[in-house]
Amino acid sequence: MKMQTIKKIEKKALKSSGIDFIRLGIALIFIVIVMFYTMATTGDMSNKMFLVIATIFGAYMAMNIGANDVANNVGPAVGSKALSLGGAIFIAAIFEVSGALIAGADVTNTIRKGIIDLNAFGDVNIFIWAMMSALLAAALWLNLATYFKAPVSTTHSIVGGVMGAGIAAGGFGIVHWATMGKIAASWVISPVLGGIIAALFLFSIKKTIIFKDNKIQAAKKWVPLFVAIMAWAFTTYLTLKGLKHIWGDIVNILSFLPHTKKPTFEVASIFGVIVAISIFFIVKIHITKNAKNLNNNREAINILFTIPLIFSAILLSFAHGANDVANAVGPLAAINDAVMSGGISSKAGIPFWVMAIGGLGISVGLALYGPKLIKTVGSEITELDQIRAFSIALAAAITVIIASQLGLPVSSTHIAVGAVFGVGFLREFMKIEVYNEEALKKNLSKEEELLKIMVIELDELQTKENKDKDDYKTIVELFEKIESQEKIVKRLRKVLKKEEKEEYVKRDMVKKIVTAWVITVPVAGIFSAIIFFVIKGMML
Image 1 (tube, one colour):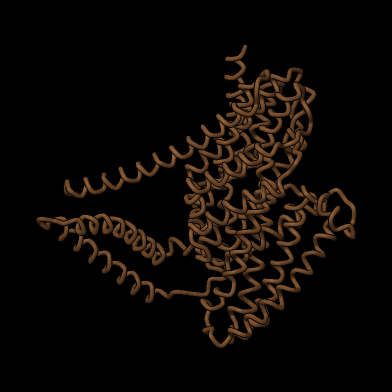
Image 2: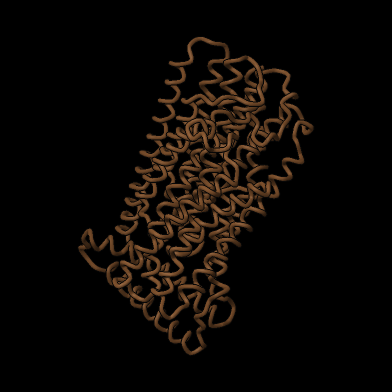
């Protein structure tokens, strides 16, 4: 490689480093603003600095949730090109904050899922140190997982952090191991359930529409029904998960509703049916009106699922903000309550400013670092179009509804990614393109010839004298294209030798993600225990 080419690549790397530096600077500015706000508003009190430091950890945690967890809500929509990356970030940022501030929890369990015994903490300071450790450990693990492009569960990270700090503070007996067993079960239940449901919906759409000769006629009949099912699922889901924290206020306004502490499945389902019926007729009228402008192919059918996909991204983001933000800032709310009251409570009110830090932090983290995981979920596990992404979004909502009614512990992250796996594996199972040996040889010959042309072009450019800016840009692009083309040729050779079957799901991504899921709780627990002992050593 010529020296000029090396300099060109170095310049590109320096530009990337500069962008990373700007991102880090913005993140630090947000943390500094949070720190000064907390210092200015807490006044003089004992343990004030603990609260300030915990708030910094909370802001850091919120940004990592935005960078990692939110990708599951918008990744499929981006991967299918129903939404641009910028549009998805904008929508998620707005509705995550809205969900947190409008329908976020007023009260949260200080110990997520009741995994440790509060009575084991004899000293409020020990409790504060443990919660600080849990918060920082969960944030560090999410940061590490994001770096390696592995979508993991925020809830499991917090659970691991609380468990590790609890064990460090009070021994193994402090942990409710039966509860931990249920959480471990969700590692299997969530992705399997999400994958099965997503695959079933994709299979249904293929059988009822895509495999039909007259796809437009089939779409008139079936697309309104599928979209109506989504409308029912999301209305029910949003009512159960997004409105439960403000249900009392809604009941006071709409007095004809049953006076319950939170919406029942029956009431939520009725809301869903009402919305679904309305959506069914709206979609049916729209498709009938525009049918003459649609081509009889899969691309035209994909277009019909674009708007429902955008709404799914909006509703998933709102529901995530209403639920997971409260879960994530639970330890911070617990520390705030302990500092203010001087005691330890099983439940703690979440002040508006704590919820605001969670919501805004998620938006900042999403905007700065979210694209990496959005691309992973949307395009690096399996190729998605609108129909596949629609099946994934629908599976995410329905799986949560089913699991909540059966009392099964599930993770929204595992459900969404499991649904992506399910769609990809169904594509492999239903693969109908069968290449014979002769066709494979022709295809391989064509790809080898293309590779040869690229190599010759690169050699000519490298030996050219007085290269201009465009030449250097082309050289860098050719190196990337040649690397990609070599992989294609290598794969075709293996297929021809019957050493490898064509795969629609990237196995390396599956292994990496599943491994990250399995180690989330123990790694967050180890981080938390170490941090607790460091804090304890500094304070005693």
